[in-house]
Amino acid sequence: MNTSSAPESGGRAGRREMIGLAVLSLPTILLALDMSVLYMALPHLGADLGASSVQQLWIIDIYGFMIAGLLVTMGSIGDRIGRRKLLLIGAAAFAAASVLAAYSSSAEMLIAARALLGIAGATLMPSTLSLLTHMFKDPKQQAMAIGVWMGCFMAGTMLGPVIGGAMLEFFWWGSVFLLGVPVTVLLLLIAPRTLPEYRNPDAGRTDLPSVALSLAGVLPLIYGLKEISREGLDAPAVLAVVAGVVFGLLFVRRQRTLAEPLLNLRLFRHRTFSSAVVITSFSGFLSGSYLFVYMYLQLVEGLSPLRAALWMLPAALATLISLQLGPLLAQRLRPAHVMAGGLTIVAIGYYVITHVGGSDGLGLLVGGLIAVAAGIGPASALSAGLVMGSVPQESAGAAAAVNETSMEMGVATGVAVIGMVGMSVYRDRIGETMPSGLPADVAETARESAAGAATAVQQLGGTAAAELNEAANNALAGALGATAWASLAIVLALAVVALAALRHVPPTGTETPQSPSAEDTPPQSPSAEDTPPVEPVVAGTQKVGAATGTEGVPTAAQP
Image (tube, rainbow, N blue to C red):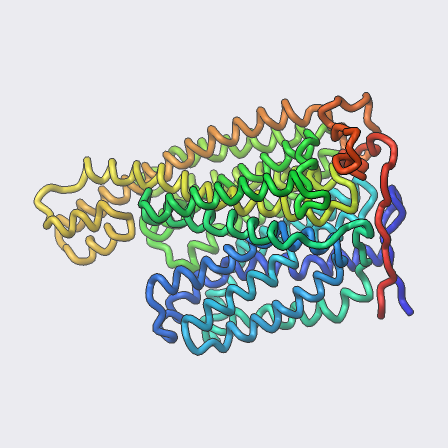
């Protein structure tokens, strides 16, 4: 019988763990790929299945909705039943749902299959990250492993449209879903031999009312934010957001009363954990500006979706490099300084983007995006590492789920808020510069969106079309600049947060130079119910305080 166990605390990982890292990279790439690969396939499957515009939106969105809604639940379940076990169950379900999606015969069937993919995906994301922290106990190796994990996720997101476009050149739309089958089969074959099992032996049963409240909080909130980004502040979207907030508050209230909550809110008392979660969330918030980047590339520069995706690859490469560079720098410098320095580079990149005009702005845009990507990598990798390093091993699944949920919520909020800023500027600019004498319906279409303006230009022809095209291009460039200014302000605020809230964290792999502040140690209470059986850990430091509970039971890996 082959056995697999993580190295002892502080020990260096060996060949088995490195193979395990490669294995865990597979579902990470796959999950991110499935989020973006459909952008190219949507017109093809829409025509083949007769999907309406509303159905097409649900085909895209339901996957992310289910992942975001179930991350906390699945992270907690992984801590209870075993993270490797949950990973394997999720991988098998993902393969089955991928086949179902590929051979869907109706839009409704494809929506249901995408929902199943999202449920399976929610089991994979926290399992991969929490297993990494169990396998790599050495702080420097753990930082490297998390950087690789983040890099795989970013690579999958960026490569999705490129791979989707390439596959559609030779195969039918269902082939983009079948990409997941060989990856998951490989995972199912190799993971039992290379990945350790870990579960929290003291975890109780999963609280089903908490699961329901978690879903009722996250799903309508993200749905409402997405609708606001598309349609503006209409009543149904606002009501969905309000409902999500109300159910979210009820979820928090219930967690405070449970002896064994689905999400241990005491984790947020740890300054490192809560600060890193904030940085992760607002890093996702910055994604809101990318909507206008893609519109600029396609509508102003006239690039096809595939060529636009290819122009984004230099930024993707910069991200991959910086994700590894950040943890290396953090071995010599304090993580707060590395993150703040990276965020300053991001701010410079956004400042460059503010100078992109309505014509010949491709070079400035790509250069600015490369700077943004190069600077955001260290912040993303180090914040994830700090989240995972500041909790005890038995709570790693829940912490991974919080990290990824905060990113999902940040992206959804950023798309809505920054999207509204950009659309407001676009409508104001084009209203001021639109040529006079246009038919009322044409003018309204052009004012509604940049895509509508492109359609109106094709309908008009002649001098009026040229004038409207110039006005729309300048308005879209203005909207892009406004979103860049908003993102720049957020980035500078995040740099201040990193310097102020994380200044106590020493370089990775060094001992804590001074006693931690009271803020960093979860407060003790006379109540046994309130006393967390945890050992707070700051990434790259020794654990704080004496052990008060078990570290968990690694079990043998079966061949």
